[in-house]
Image (cartoon, rainbow, N blue to C red):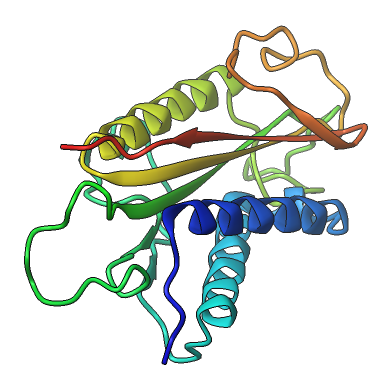
Length: 210
């Protein structure tokens, strides 16, 4: 018989997985050379959470977690009907049947957002492609605006009985003084600093009763 969970226990598992993924990031020096590092980080978070839930509930076949690997574009976040990582919690809380979900039985949603500074220099070939890296720098201010869209999305989900967590990672390998450092981006953040060029933080969105 699978073990049931409480919302508090589920939140604690999410926090443990966040800390585990943050430690994993510090051991991947090439992670932020990827074109879309948030995809890999989000995948790692989803895998760890699925494994943790299976182990805690003693249900090795549990698989009510969905993962959206698409990359959010400006203005498109609001149209999403689910967070990138979504957990249907009914089975975890022992809810059966098709009755409407009670306010005390929220779903769970997670999202990852990466902020990274531009390299110290960028060399392009004759076709305008980077020669020493696989990605072109983007505006951190634009990334910050997309981050605020994600905040608004998770806040909207919280009003629909979805407990949410936003995991933000800031990589500044070139040691620039960016809008993140001046607190113009993610001014709500309380950053953890596992490396002198890497920071992370998490914001939680508590499900609100309908």
